Image (cartoon, one colour):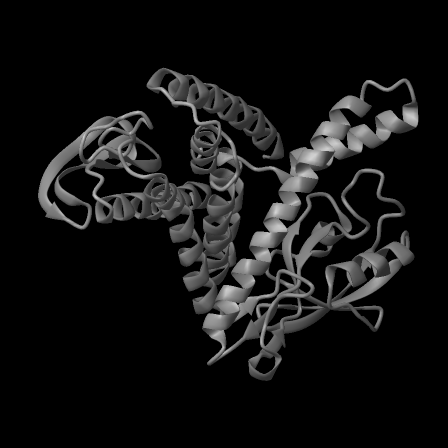
Amino acid sequence: MELVFGIIVGLIILVALVAVHELGHGIVARRNGVVVEEFGIGFPPKAWGKKIKKSVLGKNVLFTLNWLPLGGFVRLKGEHDAASEKGDYGAATYWVKTKILLAGVVMNWIVAIVLFTVLALWGMPKILPDQFSIASDTVATKDPLQVVNVIEDTPAAKAGLKQGDQVLRINDTKVDTSKSLSDETKSLAGQEVDIVYTSEGVEQSTKVQLNADNEAGKGFLGIQTREREELRSTWSAPIVGVGLTVQLTAATFSGIGTLLSDSITGFFQQFSSNEATKKVASEKLTSVSQQVTGPVGILGIIFPQAQKAGLKILVLISAIISLSLAVMNTLPIPALDGGRWATMTIYKLRKKTLTKEREEKIQTAGFIALLALIIMVTFADVGKF
């Protein structure tokens, strides 16, 4: 039931973030004389629709709810670059088209800034080692190391540790990070140790016989943990919201660059006759598959886990996904906003006409490539379950 609830919450948040993105396109289009014909939640087939005489998107705009709840869209009059009638997107100037295409990206960045600002006031989970903050207006608090998962048939499970418990000490040695816990249990592999922890607010201790090795990949103790440090601000919260958005945007672009580099080099290195090179290639490709998540992973893994972790983590994940949507839509991939802008710009610089037929071929090719990538990632996501 928790999984189903997590998926429903995830769908609502994803649809809301995409709707805000599309709303940005529509508002900027309307303000620049481009007619908005339809604003849809979800993708066709249509479940319900109604024309609204007057709205923020203009007059007689068709608002629809559609059966595939995976986002949304805005349909403009004359969406092809070659359209030339009054009110057509294609008839707008290059600058106006640029503003319309990038409006969705800006809206997602604004949502991220607002959510990060709220979190800065509420208590921002620390997710980066050098996370942006204003030192003079930051109070840091740190929670004990919390158990988020107990692996079956391990020393921890046999000792009665459960999700939500907080690990304090091992043999009188304080452990307050996942790394310190891992290092301590590894150094004591095969030994019986005394673990001090709190369960439902009550401090307890238990004797545990650690695994002698980690060949099964379950660890020496058999738990997955999370340490939570929060940074709280007051007057500087909006500055932190902007600063963290910029910092994470740069980190996201850097991460995409690394993923592309590892994907390309890993793909070619796997055909090498050198076994060491093949091993490196396998490690790179495995790392890529673990880092990339598609719709199934977001809805089936990330949101259910975030929903269990609490509202604060859910808001954090929503902010990060909104920022990721902004970044992805700046990339020059046909079928995405950045790809449409890049195509339009290339043809303008070449002083050639971007006909309806050419544009459809480019966007269709990009869409097919994007769909193929989503399918591949989905297979990887299913494996993660």
